[in-house]
Image 1: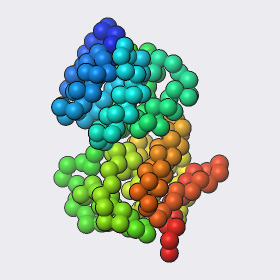
Image 2 (image 1 turned 60 degrees about the vertical axis):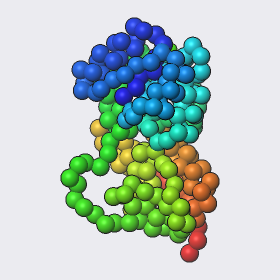
Image 3 (image 1 turned 45 degrees about the horizontal axis):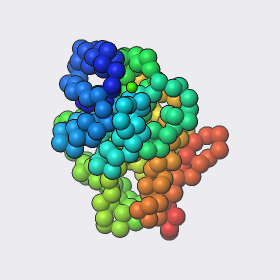
Image 4 (image 1 turned 180 degrees about the vertical axis):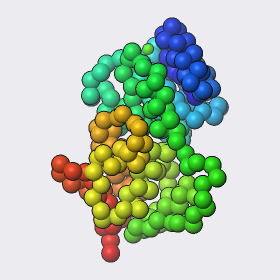
Length: 225
Ligand code: CA
């Protein structure tokens, strides 16, 4: 886990507390260092402060997302919705507001890095909708036979939708299925992640759509018979 935070006191405290919670932690203090580490190291999650001395956390987020699907949690001092949404739009998986509550952060880290449990029963299920296929075992999504990269959260959300095609999913059901039932998140996360997934699917020319069902949630449908 990589903590990107220029305030030494906060970085140390977070590293200490997350270390106690069982995570392996590295810390850097600038956006440039974060990019170098993200290039060379392997981290299962990035804890990324928005206010950094050189690049903004948003810029770091955007560039790390271009490199791959490492989960990113933004740390914002400003509790305003636009700031939170900006990070999520750029590909962050979640955000926390300062002062950071370590228990909450730990829960959020577990939600974004959660993988299929080891030794899970082998399943040959492959979900198909129009020109898209998703194989949970191989953690692979293909559109017209070409692999498409998704973040772990986006992947879980797409898998959930594909296993329930044409059935409306409430925001809460999505939050429970994708982030976990013990996750104390707000449904804004669902909306932004759906929006991001939609754009990704459109960008790859997948013939499926995630429609908004006003006041309730979302439903995935093929746009081609
Ligand atoms: Ca800072």
